[in-house]
Amino acid sequence: MKPIELIKQNAEALYGEEQLLEKLATGKRLKVKLGVDPTRPDLTFGHMVVFNKLRQFQDLGHEAILIIGDFTTLIGDPSGRSSTRPVLTEEEIKANAETYVNQAYNILDPDKTTVRFNSEWFNDMSFKDCLGLARKMTVARMLERDDFSKRFGSNTPISIIEFLYPLVQGYDSVMIEADVELGGTDQTFNCLVGRQLQKEAGQSEQAVLTLPLLVGTDGTKKMSKSQDNYIAFNDSPKEMFGKIMSISDEVMWDYYHLLLLKADEEVKVLKEQHPMELKKQLASILTSMIHGEGVGEHERGQFEQVFSQNKRPDEMPAFNWDELADEESQSLLNLLGNSKLIQSKKEARRLIQQGSVKVNDVKETDPFSMLSRPDDPMVIQAGKRIFLEIRP
Image (tube, rainbow, N blue to C red; front, side):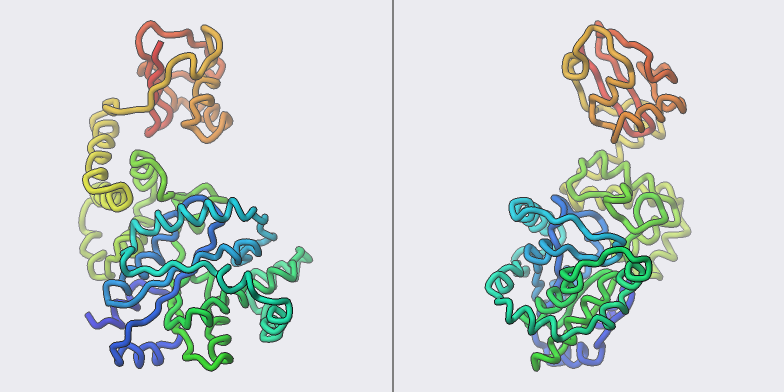
């Protein structure tokens, strides 16, 4: 496969392809930029899509430049948002940035990765320089962005500082003289601004490669923490495996394409096999990719023991009674809620009332059923994937 074919595989669009081909023909080691804003303490599988493509560039001999947007996070990326993003403190941003880099190395080759923080150049920028940058973009051009135009049309506030975000992201490309920038399809506008700023600075314009947005575990919306449909890099192996197994068969093919980098022809062959086995294979590979060799297969064995053989897993979270209750008797709802293994007590109540909770293999449907300190370890199962042991 030619390098350009590998680069374009599973991508949504490539802007500046002719310029990229010319650069590839020279044999030059390209600077391939990916920017991430450390707005949260962990990465999700949605990030893995662009990290995988960046790793492909590394394997082709090019330099990956990971831009940590510690400065741009103070602004907040408005892409795809209907409201202004809350601002984080510098301490929160720094802590998040450290975890981002460590988690990124699950995919990227550290020896071929250069990490830059855009505060390196923006912290020293004068207000005069800032105004000079703002002069390069019109309000009309900014309103071409779908999210801005919708907010403007509905009289939803848009701060002036948000208008600056695409310029700030684009200026990163000028500062590192990027040859290629990667991003999700929701970053297209911002990346193209980078091309424009490079041209005005007399630089060769970067190619822009956009990638599809990964659908979350709900099967309909973009993977996002705000939608609670995400798989995080720092999920436990059991949680990660279980979340992957919860996706629909249709969404599974996107994961094979975008996370395992399978070509259309390969996926076509895979579709002839049993979907459940393929999903377990997918979950095993991805879990091992993040947590280490062999971990995925271990979780697969635990999963099959519970779901195929209707047995309890060999390993489960264990609590002493006094960790979950302050009296000799406690309601089932409070025991589950206090374990923190379920998102909320509201969710725990729903699971109990719909008959999805068992205490020592006996179904319970009353959230306020009182349980006493057990003489022997008690096992509570909530849904298909959550087990906990309560010891005296």
